[in-house]
Each structure stands twice: as structure tokens, then as C-alpha cells.
Figure (cartoon, rainbow, N blue to C red):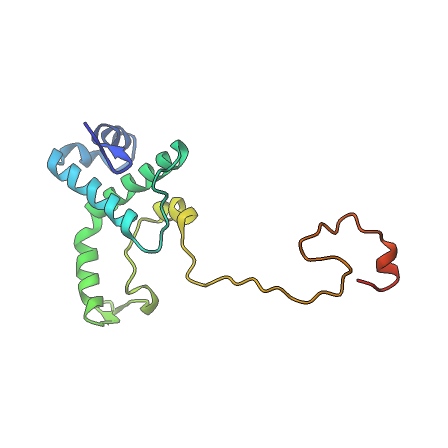
Length: 161
């Protein structure tokens, strides 16, 4: 069987056979298993908060496969709840239900993932805050690109830097 994203159906069957509570995976049709793994792969690959390498290393591929399998299982067990909540959130509802659950406004446009997958995917997080570097005037008698670990300490004693 071909791979679906970073994992094959055969590897997914092995993965779920060793996870507590995931034995139901064996009862899912092959078409649904393929759909879940494909959707989980697309969810991770196309989520703008991640920067996934086009050609991951073997170690990265193993971790991404793990995150994909976790996400597929999460979707199988929680997609109906997620759809209901995301439907409400898309309508700008911030509080709903008998227990008056509240939705975090900053997370309204985020796609949910299982916590364990988030730990794995953290490496691929794309920062939303730009990072700037500015060249500044320096008092040192050396340029900013010079290694200063071997400069004579007598310069410091004379107040040069």
C-alpha cells in the first residue's frame, strides 16, 4: 500500500494496535482509514501555523507520521464535537451550551489538534512575530562581526568597552 502523507495504512494499523483505547481502528473500513489519514495529513501540511519541510529527514518523517496518526485518531473520536463548536465559532458565538462553555477568541480560527501532536509539531511552528536585527554604533574598537573573546583585557580596564 502506498503511503498517505508520512504513514501507510499498514503502519497505522500497527500503531493503533499498540495504543490503549484505539482498538476501534481495526473496525473502521479501509476507505475510512484512508480518509482519516489523508485528512489528518492535509490538516497538518496545509495549516499556516506550521512550516513542514518538503523533504523531511527519516527522523522528522517518523515524528510527522506519529503526529498524523494521533491527529487521525483525534478526528475519528472528536470530529462531530469539533464541527459543532467550529460551526458556532464561525457564527461569532463566544459562549454556548447548557454549561455555558466559552470560546477563546484568539483560538477561533485555529484548527484543533490532540495535545501530544502539538508537542511533536511545536518544532515546525512558524512565529507570527517578525524578528529584526539592527546594526548599531558601537564603542568597541572592533567591528560587530569580529570575535571579541580574545581581546586584551587591558582595553576594558582603560574604559574602551
